[in-house]
Image 1 (cartoon, rainbow, N blue to C red):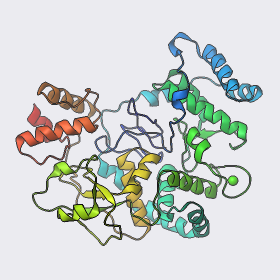
Image 2 (image 1 turned 120 degrees about the vertical axis):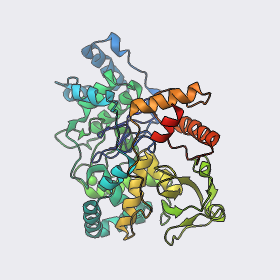
Image 3 (image 1 turned 60 degrees about the vertical axis):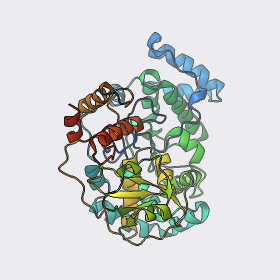
Image 4 (image 1 turned 90 degrees about the vertical axis):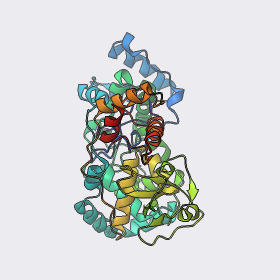
Length: 427
Ligand code: CA
């Protein structure tokens, strides 16, 4: 699945690496927009309970011996552990992927273009029709709409055609021994062993992304153990070969994340002249009626409860399209904590339902800041008395706030978007 690699985030990462991540099948989007990435369908609930390994002090063999004790204490069969770890070595490609900090990331519009392409929409419509009876049964069981499931399937694995080829045990062992967030990876590794012990994995072993995301919906092992279901009734939760199991598992996860069946994820809006862009802040939640009173209107007719709470989202700053985001958008973020990813899922769902794409133009001529420029931006903001947080090149809430305050001091639209022009002004 998707993920990005932002250090210190609560979830983790995966196959497509960029600054932030996204679905395995696609490259991620850009950092401003996207919240850091996480492994898709990742769950972190059990991470804190596992002690972190003193890796640098131990060889991989010594570390594995300690892991074996922990695994057996956690109920893993010793014979299964030994068979699974026979011949397992560190994977240098996984280390490389985990430590990658690319200078440039894709602008959000490039990411959306690839994620919601004409061919992906066309294929998704065919598959939605082909799996109609399964989707109806899934909706009856979990109250999740057809389109979002097809969209997740499409972005996570290009409809099952790209499920990764890494040995998940080897990848997770490498990350747990030598990765940046060893506690998290160790919990994923133990969860993967539990999946094997339950007999749910393919006979050839667990395969997936370099970050351990598995199957057609790219579930991390802990998510698999919490939310994967056997929907085709063969007795195994098979997210690799069974599309009904994969789609139903995604539905089960979305249901647990608060999905509201029949409600939109959000929708594109037009903003009035002279709008206060500082309201485009994830912390500013208002009802649709309140947004409407401010002169904000959907670009097409939308059926949604006027009392629903929404936030205003400007993925490319005030020069690009604007969206109101509802609760279902937050459910998608629990699947993969990247706003670019969630926006792509929403737009692909709309397209599968026959709706038009984004109406406003993206600012395609804007030059994106590279990582070193984002760090410079944060350093300059700090030197001028703003508080963007640590200069790590990651544009999070604190950096956006500092950008907004600087924009307000200049009398500019306070959209919190770190443009190249803004960096020049700071210099
Ligand atoms: Ca099954």
